Length: 357
View 1 (cartoon, one colour):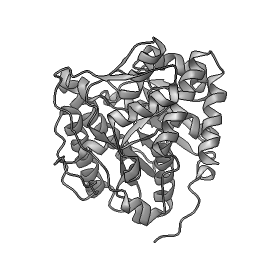
View 2: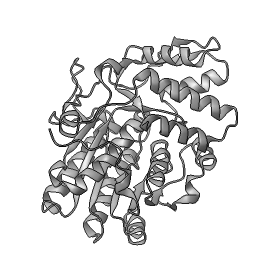
View 3: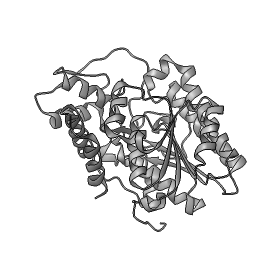
C-alpha cells in the first residue's frame, strides 16, 4: 500500500488556480465551497443552474460572489477555450454534464453532445494549455456493462452503458483514455477519471432523483411516490466523492503513477434498495411521512448496481466517512434548515466541518 497522508489535502490547493466546470450544479456548488475553504483561486464555467432551487441555493450560499463565475456551455469549444485562456488553470475538475438518466431518454442527442463532446472539448483545451498539470474528469458508476449481478464492478470491467446517459459517460471514459495515451503519456499532464455512485445531500433540487422527490413530497405533506423500491444503488453523501476528487487531483499532481480510473462508492453495507433509502428518509423527517410504490412504466433503469472500491481503499487508504443513515440524516437536516430560512452558508459549512472532523 502506498503511504496514506491525511485525506484532507486542502494545503495543496492554497493559491492554486482551479477551473471547475459545472459549478452551478448540485455537486459543483458544494465543490466550489470546498475549494474556497482550501484557499484555491476558483474559476467556474457552467450554464445557469438547472433548477430554480439550485439558483436560490447558490444565492443563499454566496459562493458565486467569491469565485470567477463564467457562464458557458462545454459544447461550445470556442467559449470554453476562452475560459481556459482567462483562468490559466493549474488544476481542472470537470463536472459539467447532463446528469439525469430519464432526461437522456428525452434528449439523447443533447446528452451525448454535452457528456461526450463536452469532455472532448475540455480535453482539447487541456492539450492546448501551457499551465494545466492535473485533471480529473468525473463520470459515473453507470459506465459499466450492467449484468445485474450481486458483485460490485471493478475499474477493469467492460464499459458499456445501457441508456443514453450511461453510454455517454462510457464514451467520455474512452475519450479520456485516448487523450491520456495519445497526448499526455509523458506525464506532463496527469489525467484521471472518477466513477462515483449515486450522491445525496442538501441543495439537490433535480427532478427524477429519489431524495429531492422525497423532500418535495414531505414539505407538501404528500405521500412519497417511489418508482423502483427494489432497485439497489451505491448511495453516498455528496461530500464523499467531492473529497476524493480533490484528493485524486492533488495526489496525482505529485505522483504520476496514480493516473487511472477510480471507483468511489460506499461500503457494501450502505448499498441499499431505494425502498430502504426511503424508509431512512421517512424516519429522519418524521411528521408521519410515508412512501408508496408508484410504477410509471418509464424507460429502462438498472435494478442492481454496486461498485467495488478495493483499489482506492488499498492504493490510497481511502474509506467512506459517513454511513447511509448519516448521509440521510445530514440531508434532511439541510433541507429542514432550508425550509426554515436558516443561514445556509453556515449550515453547509457546519456539515463540512462535521464530515472532516
